Image (cartoon, rainbow, N blue to C red; front, side):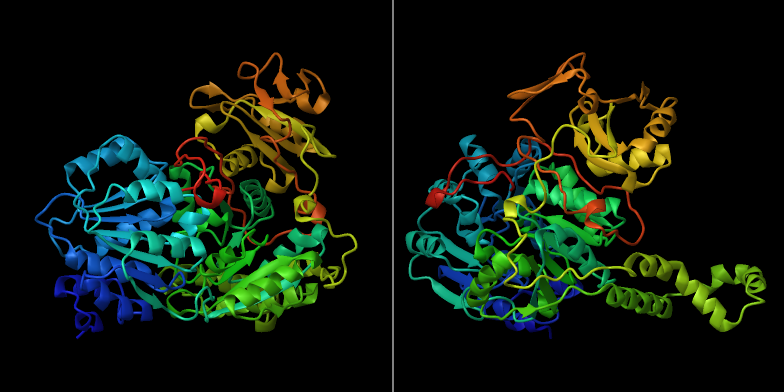
Length: 625
């Protein structure tokens, strides 16, 4: 008998979750499910991400809901679109053997008309982000007067994002007789206040010690100088050939820039942040779940709800502003009992923050050294040998080519063949890292370090970088291009390397991009005969790089313009976007592996997210859910 039967879960549901790979309940499930099945208690569950919280509340809800009644009986609030979709899909999978189960996901970034239509058809369980749920309530399109259960999942993060006011407004539309179940990874005073305001004598369950980190995760930190940060990051990645990780940055701009640089340096990477449309986010996450992406570069908010198995590493390219967010970040790895590694790349000024995090999570960090060039080369070599040893051979397909292959190798010994084969990949690393310098910095070496704001170079100007020319192209976001798509389109048609392309500045109906000056003529000639969906593609040297046709001021206006004279306030890139001086070519490091231009960067979209102002505690809500 499956242990879930003994917890009181009906056979149809147990059969469904058994097919999903549920063999035995996690500690939070084993402890919470019997309590929640009674339906008689408010509940507070404190447990880290990746411990099975969705099933802990989803399975009891499926037992308690009356499916003969087609009105909202349960409301689940969560902070982000990704988590909203994950929860709704999980509950649908748990209920696949049940009839007349209606679960609707309500979140910003998707067509609200379709969500309203789904609600009107009838729904028992609503999974929602607070902003979009508030919009639907304002339209008087849903009635929560008979809701029996409200689940607040990732409650601490909803408050961090400023949703206190929306949560208050939403809960005010539910009956006082409902039962409230609150799940959170940490228990700050704001979460405690929710328990006091909306719960009556709740049953509290804590897995581990409050606010502590997952015991299966190792924590490491590397101290580097600001100018070496990007190079050190790439060296860590190169030293871990099988890495499948999430890289956290503090801002959307930094996230996008790091992802673009990685793609140009040959890594399979893409960005996930709040400026992407839902369609773009779904595309990125599909590639990551399919493991066609090796590195996902994300902001804190965008990464909430990412439930991807076997993430090996979490890399903190920038430490979070709030220490509690480190717990959420590191929880993306070491899930479901697996082990993981959480890495922080810091400068000497941030050692104190590492000590604060250690006290919060109750675990000590290991100070690690950036690998030397020799270490990386050796690791890559044996990583390649291991892949050869483990590769699956398709005898049926390859046998037909063996005679010709054997003829090619007839004059070589076994040792010669192995050397030549290994050298195909090995020589690149050997040549590249043979003169690699030491990137480690001492904890007390504050000289030359800059504050985080300045770590990645000065703010980008509108003129091209030295050795580059800024070009105009009459394709942009409205043509459904992301930055990565446009990079691939340019490189594929012009026959140039991605490393020859610099900053890409996406607009609506046009874009600007930098290219090494020696390739300007090659690109313009290559695109003369090309059309895009029946429209001639036009590439010209931008007036921005020559000083002609543009002027600077409080905003910038292009005269004679492409797209009718664009005005930009605040100057710079999007009012403060920064150009990196520490990464890419100037870092003195380059990447490895094969290029993937299928989506290395993503365009921004102004629409789609839940909008709002200020929530509890004076925090401004980010437009990221």
